[in-house]
Length: 183
Image (cartoon, rainbow, N blue to C red; front, side, top):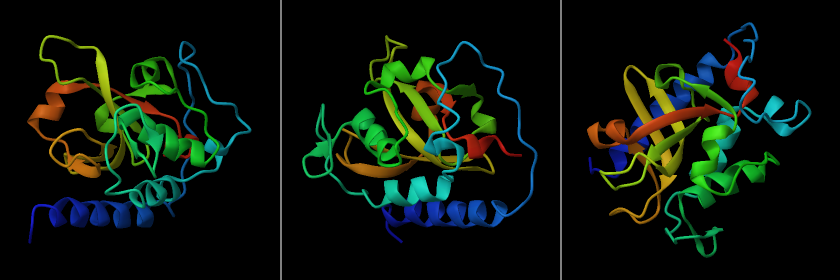
């Protein structure tokens, strides 16, 4: 099996597990983060499930990376990709990755679910400023995978496993989908 196929296979396993667990009944969790900008109760985030969001995001796999872009025919940078995906479902999000830190509900990586947004520092080892963003595809059994538009060797929208390099760059996970608060 090639390197390219392993992340896709793992994400399919994660997505099928998430699909099966989505049928379980749960209780709503209270949102108590009053400092963050919130999404209106009547918008799409109340009913949108992560499967729909991720299916659309994965339809963009292979779209070329292009700095400052947010259009699949031209390409995406990381925040352009995340914005394009959420806006497809009428969920307003910031354009810049650094603005996400004051948006949504902050959660721990251990509590992250598919569809949550993950924030990283940029590639400079001297700065802890947010410079990269993606959407979590899977977070099970200590394996976190996320979809993002990268300027790295793939130079496109791809699914990446959280490795040591990304763990070191991790800043925060943000929850935008209200469905992810159902336990």
